[in-house]
Image (cartoon, rainbow, N blue to C red; front, side):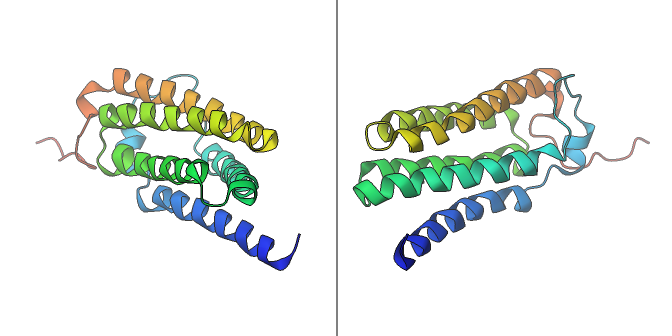
Length: 165
């Protein structure tokens, strides 16, 4: 790869990690800690590892398609999906709205499936790089739904509860 290609790949990686920064801005905090969790809830340390790997795969997939199409419809879909990705943390952890986050995640899931379909004719490798992302977001959707069902009174609740008198 030439220098321009490396810079472009760096731009895709930077965009993905900018989206990831919403996870740092809207942390789980006390509200998430007090939620009842299902038995299949992954440990907290797993999330940043999984997302780091996924973000690198998302960046490489976008880069591979961009090399073939430039800023065509496929890349605009990539950007839209990345924005939906970034919004989920704000809705779930920032607003503490599990119901809205689940609705947003449904759109987010469709955008990933759409990316896979749009990327496949351009780069099979790029499409396959997004499959683990779709699987993880499918699991995240089920976890989001389960947390909402287990904690209906926590939906939209304040970060901390006042002490009992």
